Image (cartoon, rainbow, N blue to C red; front, side):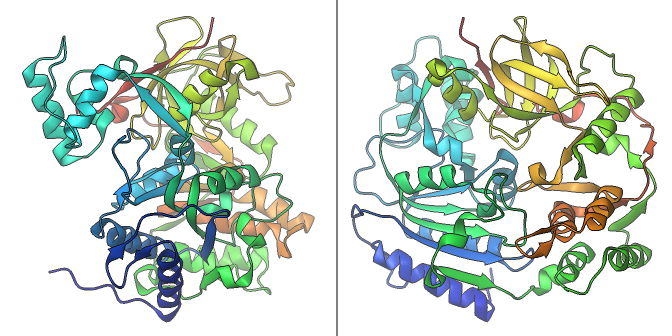
Length: 510
């Protein structure tokens, strides 16, 4: 028997505020009723804010559970029924693949904002399979697909209601059944947005166009998006549309990492005091480690978090040298970070195609090997629901004291990448890893400069974001040194024998 959730006072107040917001939209959680959606001139928006450990994710997950029990259809972005009619819908969104995967690992069916803004166009024959799986059509007969393949698709869908996953279980590739992508032309209903501190004004405008009701969940102690002048999208909301979660909950309070994060809220705390706190935490708990060297093995799957761009480049160069990487080529297993899509405006459809497949700015990927065509790479998109992609790539590897990077993969246009063995703390927002290495000399440099952001010392914001990226263990690195790896780079940890792995090909235009 599952015990009912006991909410703190601030969580209960936030729940009541969201319940009232939803009631105004025709979804009554108290009475257990829904009414048809009504178009609004302006979407209703509410923000729930709180630091790490304050219970935002628990509240979001319980709301999702209640709304699904009420019959709301979850919109995932992989396939949508055309027969939805007046059925109320819910989408749970995050700005990045990694942030969405953090929610999915907790049982919340989240997807990225891009996968909601851009929807797939299915081949009509294969869409019949999707309709059958969703209970909206008869079992189809598809040329080239055996009855056994359809049985595999059906069995997969019963366990996990993902149409692309089910079609992959039938032996199909994404390029077999998805013919393209288009910007959504029909509005949606209720949207929950996690990690909303990462949203910029353009993304918020897109969400306002699509949803009639929005609930934002965010951490005001994080760093504001680049170009937002230190502000976050929920800062502009009136106080009546904000709820703050202040209490740190018992299930989070025994975490030394969260203890350190919340200690940063002390205005009198100096950097040297904070380092002593880290040393004391490391002495009594192995979930905090003070290290004199960066661990090159950890860098292959979770980047070292730094403030300075020059530090990032030096650490990447040291990582590649430690693994014996050739100067002008990539080894399978090297981490990459998507730096955006380099396509002219006339190729808008191809841009949508790449972004919808997860290759959005900030996406963390692993190089799996060269693709089938020159300039193409096989990639594993971390946190994506269908992670394996074959795409046209422009990969730039920067080197210390050199203005021009070397480019091991150079399609004429496509998804652009930089190396991902180290990344800035700004770019790491929204992501979490089991083990996180934070490069302390950079934060000390920020402290010495005395800079502030929104009235808070910059080093404290940087430290807060960096250490809360760690799910299990925090490594506080104190020296400019790198420990050589004991194992060579590889991709065996990314190989998935399950049929749910889907290979999608995203080609650059001729």
